[in-house]
Image (cartoon, rainbow, N blue to C red; front, side, top):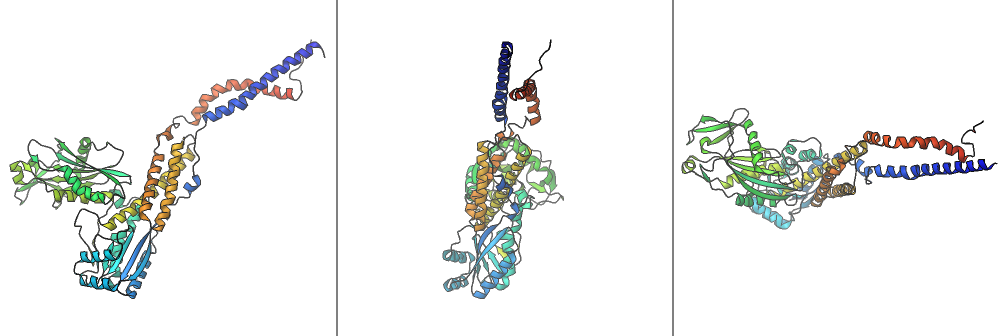
Length: 529
């Protein structure tokens, strides 16, 4: 080998090692570094647990105790109840039966008032526990079944069993409403009540279109505390409520009324069609300023009707007058409005004093429906005691707990399943640590809630179902999920290919020479003279 060949081989080796170093840096350091810095960050999620969710399999166990005068009546009634509800897949009964103690039986037969009988049963048994109900025999009844505000139903004898079963189904447990809370299809009750949430703002607005023409004597803040506050205090286990009141002056609205003669002291009234009233809500939304928080707002509005269109009467879609002591209407998932018309004497004196008890009672009735307490239809042979105060019945609170628990668990599961499906379809959605923590918390809370529902611990189950609902909603609505949606893969490659392609050409071409050189084969042909 000549000196020239040795020098040439040394230069060729240096050139090949330089190429090999460049290729090594590019493929061993550059490519992995680029791949790591451009990958979409995703926290590990429990996809297997989310895929196992079955919203149609959820049910709630409840305690039902039968207290009868004799063992035969207790057994027969327990068997009928078990047979009637055994086909239900949304509520399961843990039925217990017991013979009434002799002294309590004699007391129940002796007292004439059902409220006294309730107190006697309440003193002997713990009727304050959530998700429990007592069916108690009491012979001196004028009806087959009597139900009041406590978790107790009185029945007269074995012949009252069909009426009692119907009352339990239509009033106390409402399995059809529970099915609606668990289903994706909204039933009539779900279409009216507000969606689940941690809390609500309840805002009472007194709308006075013409304050210069008449004064209004109404203390809104006091009325809210005394009536609405007393009502929502009993629902503190379900939601957090914030109560507010405000006055809205000079908010006039054209009802497009029609003067109609009648036999009242006015000799006439002004008719407004029902389909015109929703437009009033738009005017109220412009001025009410209730959208100041992320919590849903329940709007309650008292519209003081000016004297030049008083009294105002609502006409339905069939052009028939709505005969009611209070002219009011309700908008599902928004709130309710009461049209307060002053009397003829009040208009002459230019001083209007609304009937606080009547108006606030109407607002409470609207609030009951908006929060999920349904109207109870009449059942022949069964008597439902009229509410004596604004406080809801204890078993109505339990019913709300069951509805909200099922609704929140199923909503959380559907949100997580939708999110998991979305992540599978769109690869460049970022899942950061906060979103991952929310998803894991939601999954864990769902499992805890469903287990407690089956055990019958309704209050704790509702607590975990609300946690699951809020965590799932937080994860699903997280803005960081949208961070890379505007930069899909085709755009990413369109940017990086022009950058890397010119570099890759010489690397790929020199790679062949590197392979030949490492194998000891000649890299190029010798030139001949």
